[in-house]
Length: 338
Image (cartoon, rainbow, N blue to C red; front, side, top):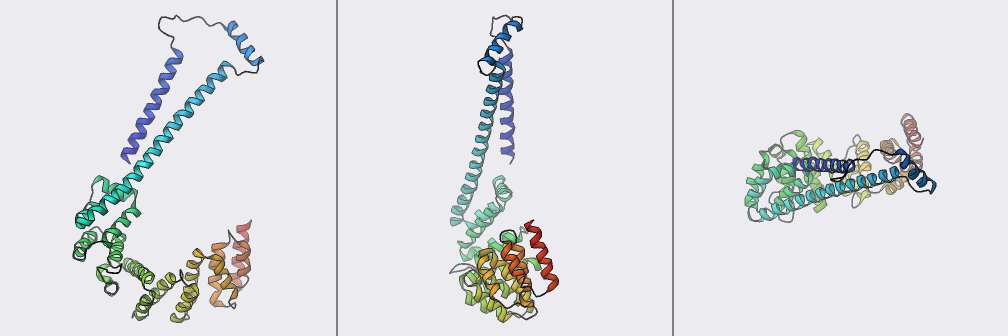
């Protein structure tokens, strides 16, 4: 950022210098030429003749030249900014590739540099946080098993929950994982620094696991002894299953959650399903018998689609059995169409 700011400052000073030089040239006569008194009578016919012929005046021509010059300067500035953007992209790509190449021979050294306070390491952290996380993920995915423990110690010392979650999930992924998902899930308190991180870590591990082996992930979720954790795991797995078979995912979740939790869980699943296929959600909700079970799910659909498809949102909302909730959603949809 300092380098970019410095470039912008120098560019501004350069533009200002150019403008000053042009101003001096406009108001300075050539060497050896004496200034002549102004002759307004001589200038008037010239201006009048130009106007008569429909040609731009000398003043208009001068203004047009200045505008063209200014436009050219702006173009130069834009091109310089574009060059800086390209340079930043090159920095990101080259830094990532260098770290990944380095990690093949010495993953601990590469990771140590990535987590350091070196100028470019900090630049990557501040300007490209998601690319930084992706780099950590790829380093751990390719890391030999005998290096994982030392690498996790490095990550743990940084008090960065996101980095640690990414590292653990990466180490437990693939066909030959360095760590066992079941072992991490069975001992979350050992790896997680807080309850919030514990939940995030569990959900991330289960999401990855469901993508790789859904039956195994479903079995693990159902055997969880803690009731709250079990319910959370079921919803997490079901949300991942929505990608491949929404109806089966919803039915599996309904079969394994209590009647008390089901309406809220259904609302959550519908919210995720809408992101992928709103028409399919609408068709499914239309096919269900109106009941309190679907009220909050329909509410969720209406709120998420009222701006893009108010007619369908309004039609589905008429199926809400709770009169107060139905009128509330009607008002919200109608206000969005005004």
